[in-house]
Length: 133
Length: 120
Ligand SMILES: Nc1ncnc2c1ncn2[C@@H]1O[C@H](COP(=O)(O)OP(=O)(O)OP(=O)(O)O)[C@@H](O)[C@H]1O
Ligand SMILES: [Mg+2]
Image (cartoon, each protein chain N blue to C red):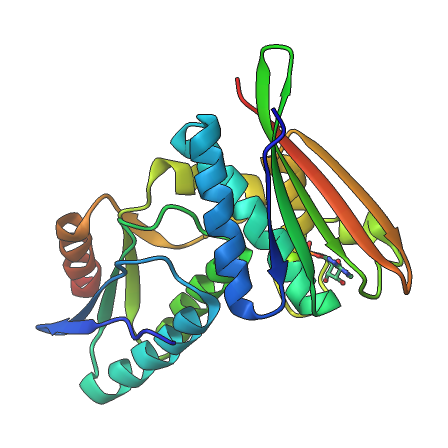
């Protein structure tokens, strides 16, 4: 099984579209309400970061499975400015936009696996997975 | 496409029941509308009911936190009601602690709590 769906993030409204898609996919996989909220929140954070810092990009959501384990993989990619200091960006409270600085460290805690690949001036790809228990 | 959230007045309190998912623009418009209404009505308290809200991200959390501080500056107390368990869990995992925020289980409890707070 490898169902995928994606939303291009171009305007603020696409943030809403991405998290709605995420919630529907999470429901479809069979996640409970708390995990649905975790996944929806994580997607909202990643989509807003794309919109704020890279202007545009894409959120891809894939239903995945490993043996009996089912899960949801979220890939947030952009060709924006990249993140120069990933360690800083992952700190609670670090923000360059007057936000709460809660997004990236929050996504890491909300999801099970979390990975950032980023190159300055080339862009950022963040992958996050949630497994169903 | 901005939808305005209705703000009702009951005695010296404002009551807001958020009925659908908050997008960024709606949240910001609400912040302005609430402060304007506080100014014109001189209300002393606000009950903000979030019962139908099924997730809160860092942006919405910031707007809500700002609304509470700004209302405080204008002399009004805010009570938040109806936070779903899933929302409470994700907020903490995000690292957001709405500290010093008065909360209550539902609208009715919220109004009672607010009236008690306004008496002291
Ligand atoms: N896709 C991205 N491209 C470039 N920089 C990014 C990207 N995502 C995050 N950043 C950088 O990492 C910092 C931390 O991001 P994070 O989401 O944790 O906080 P924030 O967006 O500043 O605030 P919040 O998410 O709480 O509203 C951002 O301020 C920004 O400088
Ligand atoms: Mg962010």
